Image: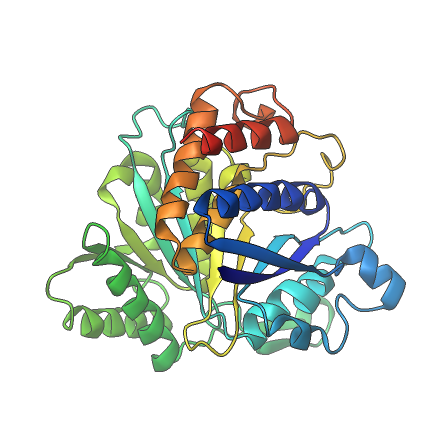
Length: 352
């Protein structure tokens, strides 16, 4: 029997509600699969943990994660307890950076059973490939002086290695999909990093002649996500641009509560980490109305990453069928509870 070791971090807010629901679904997937078993190790790292211990995770926390096949994360952040830059920097970003999770992938797909806010969505199916280690989210910079003379400098860092890596990943992914890659740029305004990005994109494209390409400025591309998303397949973007586009992708799907993502390690040294796009949503925590679909779809992405593509396909089908039957949380037009949505997805899985 194939055993998959999961490191589970529910984190803050609704992460503590939706992670157990997704794990229930994974247990059923393993049962249906027959030759699959999930073994989960739970880590209570969160903002509450910080209040008790003065840190988001133990100093040797990363060593506890290295033996897992994947990290399954819920949500991080509770600004009523810990400033966001501390909670994110001490847990989520620390794992991403030190485990070399250099690629972030986020799908935006018109799911059956959900009404897109777009008037004519035309069955869009986009995969956003985001550079996850450098770019605009570099920590290089600083502040000097004060008052009206204060100066703030924030440096974006783009390396040939990092940019080539994410663009190559996008092309390889496109070859498994519809063989089209769109590059997000802003070379008409950002005069150093974005022309460099464009040059590397053109260079990599030359090695993938079977894939169609185009390059769009980020402002226009953001509009295209709304006006003609059906024309997009794989979209590759820098750290900041990919972050923005993926939230637009969640919006046109119908709710950020359904959007999943994966932080991918490419060299095999460390596990990859899978998390929904939504935050900890403290305003609805404890009410039993959090949408578990983002976390469960995240589990589907994790199954794909672990080579269980057929079970991933079956799981996504069960998610769509459950929503088509009207079992949905309030954010997507239903009145079902978190657990009722999970129960229905499990019911659909068992009747596949």
